[in-house]
Image (tube, rainbow, N blue to C red; front, side, top):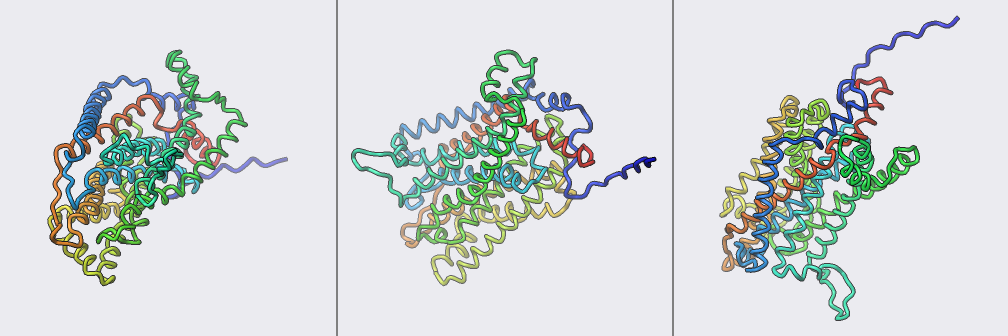
Length: 464
């Protein structure tokens, strides 16, 4: 005669276990809650779209004005031939790095907490790359010849100058954007099929979503092939986190200009890109969590994990700052010493330099506190400060280095014009408009991944 099984002891979740997601709703209730933003008619969304559309129109107007009148409208001069356009380019492409890191790298490491934030990070990557790609084209001066950057067969034998940084940037952005788009779209396919099967969305919308769902039925064969393809794309995307911004850093490091000629630039730029990217994810994530009441999906533990990653990247960046100054002092070059130890700290842009140090060096120190890492307000304000600091870092690297080169007789100050400011603010409007449209037409929380994680936790006896 068998004995009755002993009752299971309650399981206390450890620190590295994923959080409780949504209480105990049914799968249908969970799906409805995660797809609710697609049916929202909130007035605030329309107001934000109107604001973002105004910013986008400003960007278009400034771009057209630049095409017609030339880049003499900008504050660029000799020797500061690179200024706002390249600063914005490096800043935007850096922001896009966190999306690939969160989606691909954490997927390969089997970090479960990524499931609630990866879709937002992936979309951020795509929209940041769209903005980044526009600025080198604007900076060409003759943007109608942008196709010269492509190594196309030419009957005249005119090929791109591969010693120029522009073809490198074109190859880096195109590769990164293509892989990121494929990775983002493949992750969407199961959710697009879920939307297709929701009768209350209307026949036309269901047909459109069904077209992009590629005939997904959720069979075992579909899931098997999906997971293989998703893993392969993650493995392909992960090296791009390092390679793409390393290529961008070579735009500067291969020159002989004091302040640029440094072998530390590739890892330095990668760390800075991840740092600014994590900050942008927090800037977008925290308001969405509040507006759509997703505190049970994007929990304090998600915020805590993002805060830890931001703190880690912040300290890598601080180390890079210190090592960069040490190399300038130890290297023996008087030009390098002057650039790093005098011009940046006491020169015409010294105020911006110290603001950068405060934003990038002091702000992440708040994140040592677990209580502050879990505070949405503190994280949101810290993310804004970090983004401002990272933009100033790119400005200091580019403008402050060009401003004072080898010959004091050629030194000249740079000041942005209203067209420069218009392009920067307009690019922010374009980014916000694309992100708002993404929120309206695509589920920004991966429904299939959250439900799969929920069932995994139930199988392991953890709360779900």
